[in-house]
Length: 151
Image (cartoon, rainbow, N blue to C red):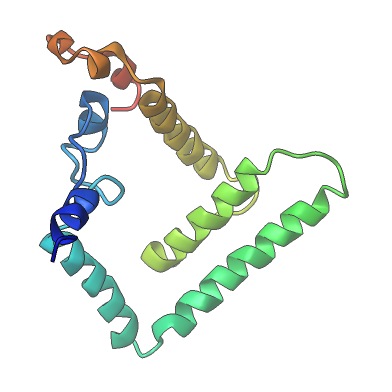
């Protein structure tokens, strides 16, 4: 019983910084949404969609294994040379999500994937940079230049 306040504190989300609030439209995305009844409903919906089609986790497992195979092929193609693992890892994760949502994948060098990766990197860099408006909230007058490129 004494752990209940601690657990609710740990599970609650901190307030969004202005930059994050702008990028996520007030936390209305998957990554920054609060643990809530709505979040649990979305999770249940995804789980039920797998079981509804009679494929369950077997389908998810095959999608992930296919992406891992492609990732291993990409890494083996470097033939022991040093490479940046970010692009092949990003493509593997993106392909799992895109297969589940759109039933399509990206191939190595796809310009659309490059655009998606640049956009995602811009979001991460903007959030990680910690703009002055996030440190000094009273600077919220006007638009933040840091978020203009990601809008």
